[in-house]
Image (cartoon, rainbow, N blue to C red; front, side):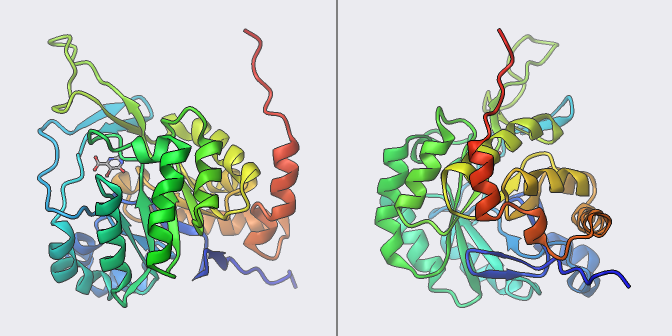
Length: 323
Ligand code: RRO
């Protein structure tokens, strides 16, 4: 008889049945519940659900067009449309509270004070297990500043940390000069975990006009096109902090997920692939399980970046190509 295998994972005190979450904004659980009914709850694809980012005031989002299909990925310029804090708590939260997994609510403020109001109000809601601080939206002016500069990230965390004992997960941007330094600042400020990457700032040119295609001009690139970048950043961040990392960026298969765990992530998230196949995360989990069985390991910890493995990884030099 083979040894028993557990896919249980733990991130920032959240007990997860397996290590596959969703990336914020890539799976509309409320629409999925309407479409699939209670079957969805029985076969929920993610071990925790991360909401689309909310802001203090309602937002319409960016002008269309908002999407562009890129080679091996897509560029979005959605622009954070949402009902605002009050609308979210009144209308969405009661439905999201019925999901069979821990609920993580993603929030974004345009100032430290807006972030503080959001964190206080959201953390006070009983069904909320953790908060994700989105300091990395590429599609709003000022969206990245708090996540691109280490001193801004530290100041934000120093303002927010005293407001709640619930876990704070910081969603990092790949559009930073030194993502490791931002990660260290988040850790110093008291973050419980890090998630990365958000999308890479990018532009699509309309071949008919020679001008930017997206209504807002630029957007964020995601999908397999960004996976190697995401792996490098996860590897760097896991080596430079002791915080658990939720790794994402172009994960389509169990083997992709395994790469992120090997690079130092404690859990992974499926994002763009959910748009192609809403059941993708279940397949990723099953493939991961079968890879783990083949390797004869007993748990995700044997695949994932434990502290010791992370330390070793941080000592590895990422070889650069000669110019
Ligand atoms: O809504 C968006 O345009 C958006 C957000 Br909040 C984000 O964090 N990342 C992204 O690619 N798009």
